[in-house]
Length: 218
Image: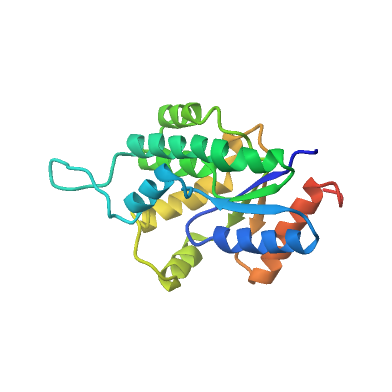
């Protein structure tokens, strides 16, 4: 049996990674392909803890009161969740020939935790090292969106604010994602302009998958 393809969608909060994970899965299923969608943080035990942290419902004691865990603790939690995610969900589906589409992967950890650590190379090197044994995606699609547009979309969505919903951080993330492939030189990373109608973005996302599958020239 031929192993399935592993595709990750990335971008700032509000870029549409969740929407386009669903739309890409639907398009592939309509062609009769077996598809499994997933996300990070995962739905495993560590991932569920992380979702509580992101929502501000789990905090740790600090000198000036309760606060979110440090960037290094978050990096370790995300790495632990990722390795569990690969072992429990991603790898078994790929072995069965299923295409796996993940709403975020370790590119997010490198982006978010590096920037919350202050943007230094030492932090980035360590974050990449603790994720060294995470299986690489066959394709990473980055949805590029101006931070102002992403901020407007976040205001329109349901649910409360999360700990990374800081406008300055999101602007830094938008710049970081535009050059994310420089930090993953061995990965196949492509960019799609997400500041367009959803239908147009979905067409381009699917085009990149067709190129990966060898169905049209790159």
